[in-house]
Image (cartoon, rainbow, N blue to C red; front, side):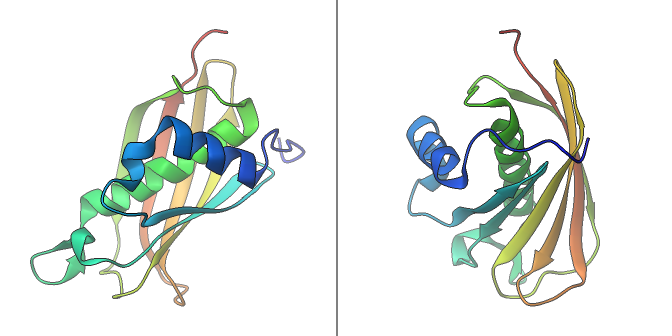
Length: 144
């Protein structure tokens, strides 16, 4: 499976996501598509007060959105612009409090099937190698 190359470039994918999902950037852009590669993508969420929860930490829902965005991006990079691919499950393990900085999610596809895709997202505070959160997700691909 490691020989799979993306069929969409980072710029093509970013343009598609901006066009089809403008709500992602409601109230300003904080989620970014940094890179796509063979079965991988890297996304980033800027540190912003709207992602904070009481106590000053980045909220779980913000990290969930980052992981879902990253997994969705890596899937589309490999199957093409299919807006109706949908999340069927997400599982999160929150491992430590993130730093007060941007979050990076390294996403990788573990199974790229015709109808189902399974991937994982490893989330880190920018500049720190300690894992903040690990997520796995399954996505349903519509019949073409």
